[in-house]
Image 1 (tube, rainbow, N blue to C red):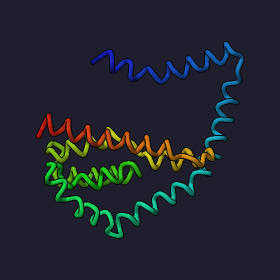
Image 2: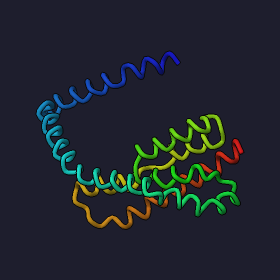
Image 3: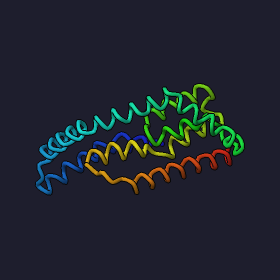
Image 4: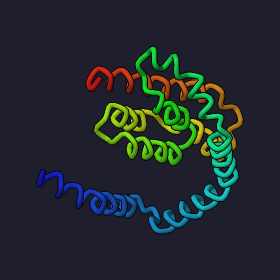
Length: 176
């Protein structure tokens, strides 16, 4: 534990030092490269703002309109039959869209049910085993101008589905 603490304190300064020494050896202007990267980062941040705003508006409309609650009620009989708590459906649906919205839903689940309950463990595992697929595709593909993202969308959503399924199976097996 002591070694891990020392490594965690020194890893960043050592990494920065290594990068600086390497740039001197390669005769690369490290500071200028850093500044150029910062300029490019600001340009990318400005270019993705419309995509972020669109995504946040869509999530807010989906939750506020009652469509999310309607969908959960529609799936409740199937979920009850499978032994899956319907409380995690909003998290499973929102997680591929927005990490922040999913974190808010997970926080609500943990407040209501507690972190040590089956639902709390399942929500935490789903949060950790899936990604914000639509957010990543919208923001990053949009920032670099990629228009055709059909295959990436299919693979990303399939990976999210597998992550959700694995979380349900593993948590049910371990704690159910």
